[in-house]
Image (cartoon, rainbow, N blue to C red; front, top):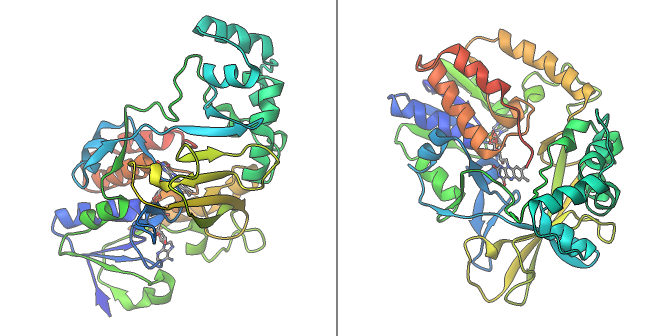
Length: 387
Ligand code: FAD
């Protein structure tokens, strides 16, 4: 029998932050992690080409939350990294999100001002006052040609559904820039941790009162741990309740099959991420990791991403059926005393990293009487963003 003050399931952002916070007030913390590493989906490592790669897809940190930025700076030296993404459209590489340069390249135009871009959009968009699905949402913003070239098939590859089969909300928030800003994010802080995310997690978890047990699934050992006053669970919520509300139809997730290759030349592509929104290939994008932090190596590592239904749970699928099932679990979770469901899997919600940090920091502050329930609730109102 193992005893601890605080028991945490999962060593991703949510679990690690709570562990660090409780250790800082003198508690003994035990983390159980079913994978063979810490860091959750942010885990990265040096591969055989001496390139720092992320095991679960490229992770770009961006935030407007001052308190999150201050917190993460305690555990890593962050260097500025403004992420850019290119997409292969009609055989050429164009920047996304759509901005003046994208439109000029694809349609061979010479738009040079915001007013001209507005005029172009106005001429091309197809107006839907209340878009009823994803297709109408994109047509309303960008018009037919950009919809076909950049969104229709990409969405099908990503979600296995055409935009017309998805809620308008899934595509309504795609950014469209009326200037030349080709940065992928517009947050105040955009950076990467020097040495990588895993090193940062090692520092977050470095207190001698934190113990991490890897390769340990909570459900295999739960009867062997005692003495804890709080349990923080960061795994899938339906698994916690043994799938009882969804025996036939589990909460759906989209997963990604990462196919890694070594290419025997210095660079494979001109940018870290190149998206393939067309039908010519069935992967969604290629990541070339050495671009992040301008790493130097003779050969290069690329990863092709194929979105699938099977595999690790990554993206919750936003539809009415899943919301209904999730709601049943949420109600049940609220009845439990001293058990907290934290992070993206336990909340069945896509969280960017900064939201996961913020959520965990605020939950700790709430439980330790440092913020009011009203302020905590206001966090829940912040809409989860899709990257
Ligand atoms: P997780 O990282 O998933 O951690 C949960 C942990 O719990 C896992 O390690 C899991 O193994 C463990 N666990 C689950 N069940 C059990 C169990 N029964 N017993 C023991 N352990 C268990 N965010 C950004 O801000 N920028 C990006 O560029 C970005 N890119 C992303 C790309 C991809 C492909 C994905 C999927 C996500 C991306 N994110 C990005 C989001 C980011 O990964 C999440 O915000 C973050 O990982 C959330 O942390 P978490 O602790 O809630 O969950």
